[in-house]
Length: 368
Image 1 (cartoon, rainbow, N blue to C red):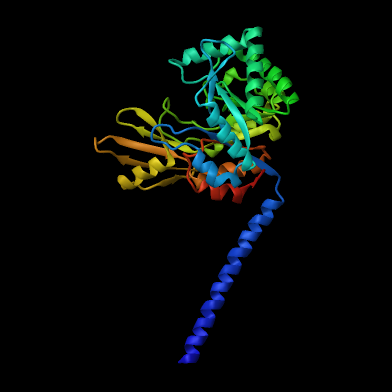
Image 2 (image 1 turned 180 degrees about the vertical axis):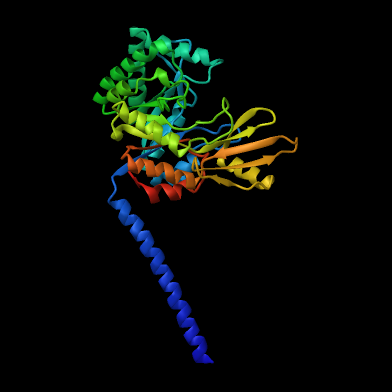
């Protein structure tokens, strides 16, 4: 009997050891394959707490090894003093976040946008006041230089998302002048641009942006490959794999170097109330809470390569939720490797499926 138990114990021990060896060798193989890949930059957009959604700092604290850059969303164009900035946080807070990021070997890019005024039209006009006036443009560039040098930013991301079509060339010129100035200071200039496919699937704001010139003048284009479906559309994927690939092909066709392209990655989803005809921007955690609460089943859409589920709420309203998770992320990261892109930009840290941070270092080599 002793011999039987001894043999059984030995077999089980050997099996466990073999399993561990197999797991280790798989992990080593992944590490080995990543070691030979070119490094990709992982930029994470950073915000403070938004309503019930958490701020980005906890994600930075726990996942900094899988990040290269954080881009705090703190500044918008001043609507009363053209060329000046309105910031949403204190100087002490900026210093604290930036110093903490630098200690984690992360670069920090300041984000400047023209969003969240009373109307969309006002955002266009505020941008136009800077773009169409040589003096205001020079004041703007000098204010950016001062801010970046004072707080030790490593670069900038210009996120002017809604422009007048007549300001298209002025915007390209701004980026050229900004790059000329900031590159001399050793700073990186990136531009966020709406996704463009060159066909009816393009973002309605896309024609405002000259990909070819912006790709030439800036150090990097952050292509916002999300919101393929949104509040203005019927329910559907946040970013289907075919649509995402079409945006990359469009950029490459317009002479944007792959080494300058950041592929936008959504950390969020949309929850459509199809009865009321409206959609809600939602975090991954919030959507998973709804899935559990309403006993919904997550389905995989094989065409878009994204997950979704449906449910009926307490008011008997029908809902469709479409989102991104670590599985759909794999298909986006495959495109980054296929087209040898500079990296990815995640909107935004703190909303995403926590498993993103296991998938990213598995699929790409993160530049540090």
